[in-house]
Length: 282
Image 1 (tube, rainbow, N blue to C red):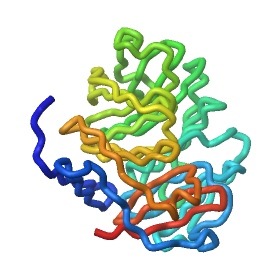
Image 2: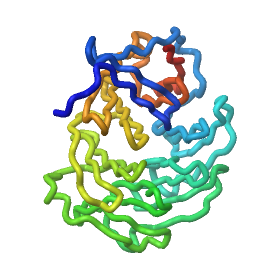
Image 3: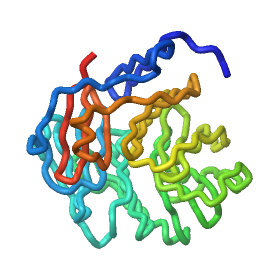
């Protein structure tokens, strides 16, 4: 293992946050938040998916498959409701002006502008039997994962394949269930919630696997990966290949988070009643 500095400072640019982790001491960073009452909800109701773009706008999908866009002050701006496409599987907000949503049930991709007006719609069933995940690429195209062919593919806005990997079984990815794809800084991350993260470069070349069972949510900024497992919040540095625990305080644990997101020195907790926030001090 490569030597690391006694104290690592991970700059989480996309999250607007700096984590300082003392390796020489405990290797653990506490999140010191002010207590928040369960009734102090920023957004009320059932939330199945929550993502925050680089302008602090929040996009959620609820149990009725309605997508809602909130301002950074949690005031609703826009919503999109259409149950005919099935359940919303993922929302990709890497490009704040081009929101990519995926509907696994119907192999369908819908691309919205930031007012949730549809720009484009792709029916992948015309070409593929089944696609399990979709995400945007840095060059404005789309990554998709085909569990029938066992391949990661990059496609253009017409659904045409630009390039594809070889069979991922060749990389040891046997029996994977890929449900999310994210690309930042020319690194592509595939997530299997039971097995962890699989890293590729932007040409589809396999890099390595990070084992992490029971993943509930994650964020990736190209240099660091924040991920939440049931009861555990962790940070992984791609540079140092180090996983560090981030302690959650009792107020957060009490809420039994479904998802955790971080943006601009604030931790967003999505739980059974809605969305609550905690400021991060230090």
